[in-house]
Image 1 (cartoon, rainbow, N blue to C red):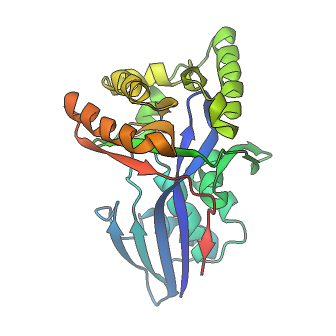
Image 2 (cartoon, helix red, strand yellow):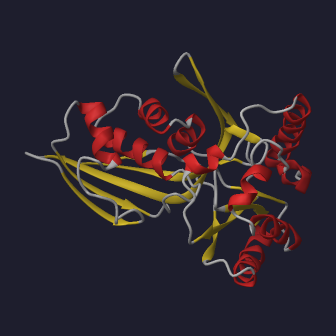
Image 3 (cartoon, rainbow, N blue to C red):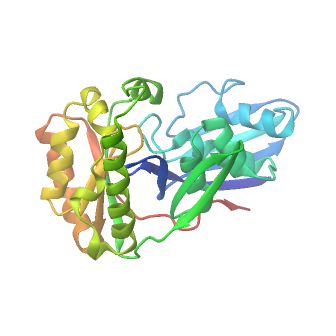
Length: 282
């Protein structure tokens, strides 16, 4: 039996659209054994999905091994369709468990998001992109004092729907705006004393997606008012990410629960440490 575990990820982080991601301490674990035919036992998040050849784990196994004759067990803490990189994480864990030489490349190709895949495989804060159809990753500095609070609504926002809300072209001024904010963000994530709320401002995706989650703007502002250094959408949403330090995170998480209730949004607030290990195989 081979077992692989990888963390969730939060991508974009405001201005770093399709570029930045950080690994978070929620995990998916995949166990694989050779078998005469495919079987999938799934527990936790995503357990309701069809446990047959359509399952992402089965599709990844076929792509890597050329067949799906495996007995697979999937245990996941990562909510599906909430902007926490569940697909990239599952693809990476499955690829590693069935013996892929490069689980990162498999996950990036399968999921289409190199940044999510890179954060899950390598851990920490990363910048990633595809170069000549291969993921190219740069690990980035992340202050040891930084931790996160994530608001996870009990509603799904499919990535395809969130992507459809975006314009096909953006003004030059908006692209420059994001580049400037991304510089602020990277400096602040490396040294929390330099992190300001403006660092997660964005003109490429967050405002455009706000129509799909009308309460998000007030929730994001409330997280900063409660003590977060900055806040942003997590990936394509609808989860929202607050960047905190250890001394403020618990208060921000409690405020997050109150904010969700005040806006009549079913959901939960999670305090999550960054995962700095990434993929583990045993």
